[in-house]
Image (cartoon, rainbow, N blue to C red; front, top):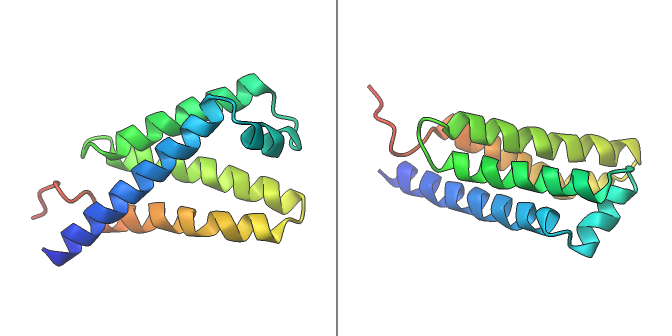
Length: 117
């Protein structure tokens, strides 16, 4: 029971962060455009990435799409980690790793409303 409450809280944090970052990308916040422009992402590409992030965050909420939402969000985070590594930006990597681990932990703990046998 306690584990389901903790997992529910982790899911809400992941959804909130995914929606927040996705909205920042989708709305074209200057800091997002600046970060992605160093990797030659156009404004449109950043906006599409933001829309995908928002969709992934929403998918996490539902048991049937839970794993897909986490997978898509983790893939986006892993892409950003790889881009930071290509720039040898270990600080950027260190910032992203907890978010990647959050998605992996949530997948391991499974959706709290899924009936387990």
